[in-house]
Each structure stands twice: as structure tokens, then as C-alpha cells.
Length: 327
Image (cartoon, rainbow, N blue to C red; front, top):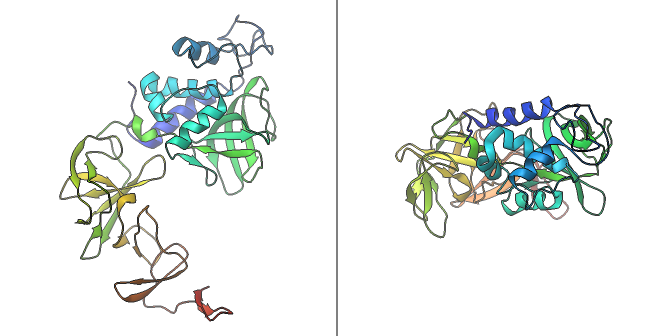
């Protein structure tokens, strides 16, 4: 089982494998599968489909349209079969609609704010029809590596090659993004990227129907204890996992809890460059933004990012109904 020392290293491994395949051409038959350009044709014979079919013949057809087989193959090469399935939200599948559904089932489906390492899905206006890997995102464009496509800035399913592509972020053909669970391929005990935080003197309140698991490592670590509903905790660090969720470190338990099960309490972000650092957490790792909130009988104002105004003039005005709103 292949594991990595960090989520970044896991993503890098997949993208490196995908980059090495750029220029590969679909074959006319099952001959010369491991030569990038020999025996080029349009019969859907590729080494990706061939190997994935050997691993999982019940799901991975061969020969067949192969954009999704290419993505799955990159993960298989990076993580081996068992871990690759976990990272891909549970399974391999060469049908793009089914692959997208795996992410949706795990809450790892996004329609905005793509990230490096995401699996991008495209639509033909009726259904999801094509997929690839995101290797870079900037303020205007998203950059991908795709199998069974061709060069250019348009979406080309069934193009017969592995290519690097670039699209404008608001391209109407983009259906969404699956965010692989890369943290499941990170070795427990590996170095996490963490950020210092602190809480108010009361701490922050756990909000669960039953006990909240404390893990030795975010997401995949062993369960070392539980915290009950309404218990106040005092985390000192946070980290982000591959699907964007935040986990908090409890020093008195030497373990991690999911921050989305915290509802109520002040959090101070030590590493934020802004002069405003305090915010008030609600369940789902949410907060009040660009508005006011009454907390323990007192009225507080929060900026567009959810940080509390303090010792400064608040930019607010009254609307036509007399409601005061932050500008």
C-alpha cells in the first residue's frame, strides 16, 4: 500500500504520473499499447483501459471510451489498488456519471473553487460526458490533464490522446469537481500543515447527536476517545484535509476532532495577516459574514470574511426599510 508524507505530496504523485503520459495516442488494436505513438487509431485500445480491466473487469470495460480509465489508472499507479479506491471515494468506474456520483455520495463534490488535484467533470448539456485531472488553477483559468481528448481550449471527449488543456474558469461545459480524499493516502504520523489558533476562555462547544470521535490523525487516524455533546473544548491548532474540511487539535487529548461539529464559541486565528482575527464558529464550520449577530446578549459586527470588527468604525448604513447593514 503506497502512502505519502502529506496531502501535497500525494497530489504531486498523481499529477506527475499524468504528466508523463502526455502525448499518448489511442491505438487501432491491442498492439503496441506501451508505445506512446505507434499503432495510432480510434478503436479505444489503450494501456490504461487494458490494465484497469485486468484489475476490475466487472466495472472497467475494454476496449471502451477511456477518459475515466486514464484518471483511475493515474491513481492506481500512485496509490495501488486499495488506497486508490479509497481516495477516489470508494471505487473505480469508467463511466463518468458513476464516478461523479461517488464524490457526491461522500460530500466531496464541488461546483466552484476548484483545487489542484481535483477530478474535473464536463457536461454535453444533457449529462456528464468527460473527465480529467486539475493540475493548476489561477484567477482566470483552470489547467487540466485529460485522456481521450485533443489539444485546444474546447472540451473534446473521445479525442484519442492524452493532452494538457486550459479552460476559462466559468466555462459552461464544466459540470463540477470531485475532490479526492488524498488524506487517506497520507501516512499516520506524517507532518501536517497546521495553523495556530486559540479560543475564548470558555472554549468552543461540541454539537453532536452522540459522541464526537477523537482521532490520532485527521480523518484516517485511529479513534482514541470521544467528546460528548455540549462539552467545551480548547483546540490550539487546525489543519485542512483534502476535501477542504477543517480539523482541530485538542492538546489535552493529543488528538483531532472535525471542526464541523463545533457550534458556538470564539476562535482566534493567529496566522491571519488581517488585524481582525476573532470569529464566532457555528456548526458546519460556518459563521456570520458581512453582518451583525447577537451573542450572549451583545451585538457584534463581522466583516465579509467573518472576522469581528474591533476598535474601529463599522462601515454600515440603513436600507430603505431602516435595517442597518454592513456595506
